[in-house]
Length: 371
Image (cartoon, rainbow, N blue to C red; front, side):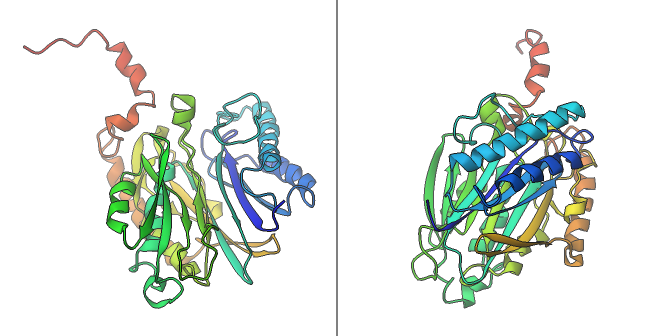
């Protein structure tokens, strides 16, 4: 058993209320009850929340990442919440639970997972991010800006413990491969990859030589589970989550949040088939109702104290992000006016796992050769 602290976010859509808008309060009560039973045993502390229709579990413990007991706790919690969702006839009850039996690790079974194991510092601020109606690649731009863009993070220029940059772990989620890339030296090559956010996604960020932190302890982690890779058809976008550590040789809290002052375009939104702006919102506004969107991101901040979660602070509950929200609303208007046309609707390559192939199958045999 490790003496380091592990922070785990494990999330799943176990039923929407109504449609894809929210998590019903009774599901969150069930989750809190289940995690409370484990507090002081398998876990040190926990927090239960939601972003849109996704039930989010934040847990701290000393068992390391990919621990069977922690993943089983989350899985069984989702199962009990699913039972209530079915009783309430919530929409898509249990849709992220793609297996009937837990096999020791929740990865590949539907729920999203972001975990980090690290040595808790004298002061350890962490930010937990939750997104709804979008995909893991939606974190590529903000994570890049936090840890590699000096126009966002001035610490990369003026902080001697950050000026050496960071190492990025980038996954090819189609070929199931990964590559480690150092920034700033390999920034251009990395951008060539992560700009294609539906295929190449940032999974983790690590310190580099010259900083204050151990090189093998990540400073950011993002969920990269893609449901269409698991289920073979569209069963909901991936609605990713992320963990980011801040301050003392890392981006300051404001530098961690600053990328979301620009509501960049992400894939997802209605039926997982549209591009739209990512709107930073307070937790109470994390309900996606306009065309099942637009996509949302919530940021909850905690201080860690021997594994205890001190908080949260609702970090986007700030008028400083009002312009970003207004820009997102204006952009949503603009994109919606395209209706079923690209670039609002995703390109055909990204529509492969939606219901579009079923539409095309009805036209099979009707196409005639052009002479």
